[in-house]
Amino acid sequence: MDIGGRLRAVRETRGLTQRDLAARAGMTNAAISLIEQNKSSPSVASLKRLLDAIPMTMSEFFTEVEANGTAKYFYTADEFVELSPQDAGFGEAAARVSLRQLGDAQRHSLQVLHETYPPGSDTGPDLLTHEAEEAGVVIAGIIEITVDDQVRVLNPGDGYMFDSRLPHRFRNIGNTVCVIVSACTPPSF
Image (tube, rainbow, N blue to C red):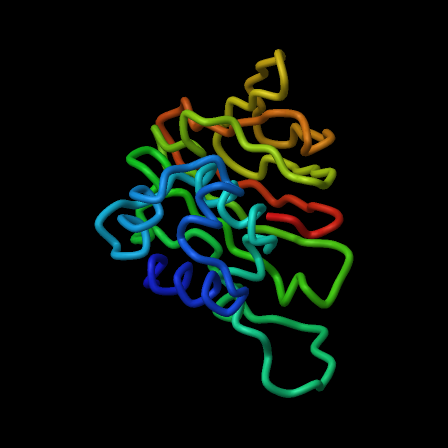
């Protein structure tokens, strides 16, 4: 996905200059210019900060709105929407993290994700925050989760639930792929 081009298109559609977006997101003009030219890849936290300044959710940023208004209730595995493709370049350790969304979260009050964390991957050094609550269950592998000032390693069958406004981070410290099924309400990631 052309993250820089998509960011530029969204920014321009909203009538914002690079300077406006930089001021709102607490970043430099130059940083936004480099991202839009695909000369720099934002971390997940940096992209989230930019989208919060627009305002727009990660789901809206990565999801193409379905053309028809027909209700859809069932999805095959290949119909999930990848929110952070491996080639998106969300920083060194996060580049391999996969967040596959079930359906179009813009049409619902619940966002469901199938998350995959290869060994050594994480959501990045900057802790994430967003306006929601989230919960999940580890299906395979292990994951170290930081929420506020607490750190815990979860195994298959273990789960988590927290207010997403608290700073948090996910990191696979194991030597096998970690798979998590999670939910977030309202959709904000």
